[in-house]
Image 1 (tube, rainbow, N blue to C red):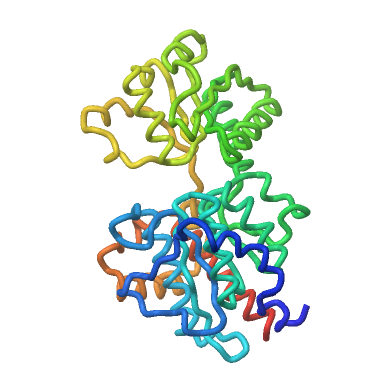
Image 2: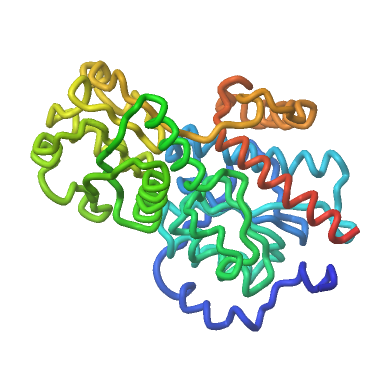
Amino acid sequence: LQCKQVLMSSMWSLRWLWVYLLIGQFAISNVRTAWPASNSTNIQLLGIFGNGLNMNDSSPGTLWSRAMFNAAILLSQQYNITIDGQFIGSQLVASGGITMNALSSSCLLISTSNIVGIVGPTFSRETQVIAPFAAQLSIPVVSYSATDPGLSDRGAYPTFYRTVPSDTTAALTIAQLFMKFNWTSSIIIYQNDAYGSDGAKVITNAFNNNNLTITQMIMFDTVTHTIRGDLKSLLLSSPIRNVILWAETDYTSLILQEAIDCDVLGPQFTWILGSTVQLNSFSQADNAKLIGILAIEPVVASAVNEPTNTTLLNAAYDIWQQYEPETFPGAENVNAYALFTFDATWLLIRSLEQLCS
């Protein structure tokens, strides 16, 4: 493909998608005024984030990821990186974790702007829709947090990439943890969608490959926000005392709260989480009951003593502190997903630069 063909949106192929523009509300919002507008250029990256685009309706993790996305865009302009003589700009979408919000908002922006790459979405369920849609338009998608192993299928998702490890890596890590402590079996609690069921599947496969056993699968309904069955009875009736909880952060907090209420945490049970939770989402009394819980999460290169481009990273932090100092937590506190977001954005920027040079 020629550079021009890659960068120009295929307007005619989007006509059928206008049905999404005629119904419902879209999650497209303006960037906070602290950041300079970057949508004036004709070459733009689309950032898809789970929460709102304002301070009041975003978690710290979302704020940090979005800040690193913005910082990467502005850094590319400082470095005079251009495509066909134009700086790279950006558009933002807040999907609220709702797949149709992500799709309809992306459709609107792609049909009205020259979107040449997508950073995101946040969730695997969104990515399973956005990635094949973008592939039809030859638009690359790089997610910073979608971990579903199925997304590695190049036939189904030919233009999808990610900077976060897939759940296959996490599953192997959990299996190695069990072998280290001579644990032989576990219960899995998982959310009933692609992320949860595929995660439970790869954990089961990792256990089977290492002579470990999953003895029970307990489902959490993401619609009703309840466990299928009585959690206390399901756990206490089992001789197994290890519980792997595979759910997104918000659902993990709900499930842990139920476990607290049912008194099925430590020391009776050892819980291993597939995502981290904020302790301030629980009462001070309940926090004490969470002692002993383990969490598996991806880490960045510096955490395992691998080299990083600190010059580039510090330049991004400087931009963040310049335009949104109130959300900057200090370089040592920026979480992995914010750094994965920067990597995803910078990867697209440099790849497009090389493609069109």
